[in-house]
Image (cartoon, rainbow, N blue to C red; front, side):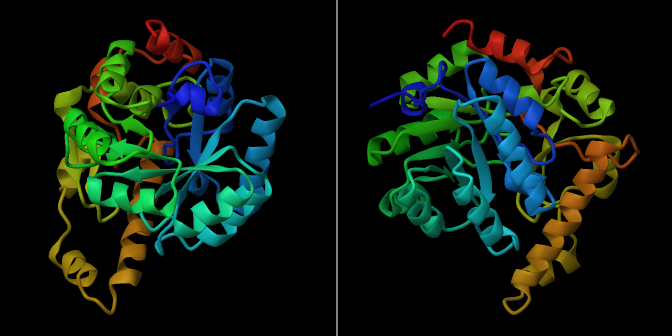
Length: 314
């Protein structure tokens, strides 16, 4: 089976992960120049005009492939407009999350766009394989943000034994040695996020970046308070204050069948607004997303230096 660099025509089998409120055009362009690929969440741009400008800017800078992450369930009211834009501007690949990617796969394949789907288990991997996905992003329990339940080796092994799709391992990667390890288990490449949060190009608060240096793996905890799903965050004083579990009212509404769709949208909106405030302003209310790979972040550096160290042994 081809490795990710062969599949996409890049130098190294690495995707700089699409990170909510963090990924930006500067980061994508630097990543492409450094020999890897990268993606950003469509939801990082508030308007269709801004999304189109971002894609156009990256395409003007480089002909190398990059992608966009698309939330495909009903909690994303911008889904259809965003998909239309990605198709019209013909991004190189789409990474789907949190929903059924059937429509995305069908529409993207008509014009030669690849679709990689986030999966956390074999059941969903088999589903997207049956729909014609080009690859699976295997999100393990070492991932930052939303994560899976299985450790990297177990998840990759299950998928390798039961699926024919290329497997891109997501979670826990901070070195070339770890990339070699997951590829020996059966992955064709990796998606890496946490170690890039403290890059100079990220337009987040200096306090968030410094927290990536100051905190370690022991400080990463799970919270369902923000988006309704388990999310890894840094255990700051504010997170300790608000707790990590949904309160009774949140739980009751989220589990009411008639209101579930609307409450989920509300919780996601309120939660991401809280994350957004923490990401862009230094306040006591710090809710900073990161994964266990924070342990390998020792300084704030240009993204090209982080990539250089990551791929030097490949």
